[in-house]
Length: 314
Image: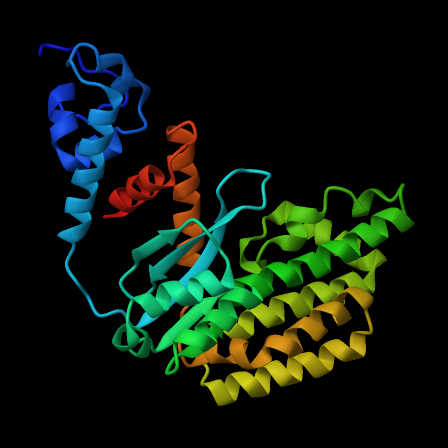
C-alpha cells in the first residue's frame, strides 16, 4: 500500500485505500484524477469506489445534527455553463447550512418537493428569501403559509447599478470622443466609501459635463443608504416612498424602468426591514459550487455532484 501521496489527496488520507474507506475523504476525492490513477494498484474498479463514496456521503449527511429550520433561502445556478438547465440550492439562512440541492428549477416540482417534507416542516418556516424569479415566489406562497416573503435587496442594488451604467453608455454613444466619459464604469458602480482618490477625480470631471449622471449616481447611493440603516418597516417605507417620489422627478428613462419594477416588488422589499435576511450567503455558496464543478472537470452524475457539494459544506 505504499503509494506516494498525489495531488488531490487530502493530507489526512495518506493512502488511497484510506481515502476510499473514509467517507469524508472519499467523497472529497471522488472527482480527483489521482483516484483513477490508483484504482489498478488498489485492485478496485470505479463502480466499487463510486458505491463506497455514495454510501459514505449518505452516512455523513445522515449524522448531521437536526436543527429547526425557520428561515429558507433559494437561488439557482446553471448546471452547465451556457445552458438553460438550472439547479436549485436551498439554504437555511439562519444557521448557514445547505438544506438540499435539486437538479431542477421547475415551480411544480419545487412545490411537490417541499410538500414531501411534510406539513409541520413547511408551517415552521417563518421567513422565505429569494430573488425576483416568480417561480420561487409562487412556490413559497403555495407551501409556506406562515412565512414572510423577502425579496433580496442586493438584486435591486444590482439593477440600480445597471441604471447608472446605462446612463454612462448613453453618454459614451452621444459623446464618443469625450475622454471624461471613458474608463468610468467601475468608479460609478463602486460604493461611495470605497472610491479611491483617482475615482473621485474621474467622477467630478464627468459630473461637471453630465449633471444628470451625477443626480442618478447620488440617487443610487441614497437608495443603498436607506437599506444600510437600522430602520423599522414603517420608517423604511417612508424613506423608500420619498426616494421613489424624488426619482420620478428626475424623468430618466433608465430610472423609470427601475421604478416600475421596484413598485411591483415594493411590499416584499420592505419586509427586509422586519427580517434582515438576504441571499448573499447563497451567492457565496454558488461560487463555491462552481469551484467544485471545476475541480471535478464536470460531473456526469448529478447525485455525485450533489453529495460532493453537501459534504464540502458539512
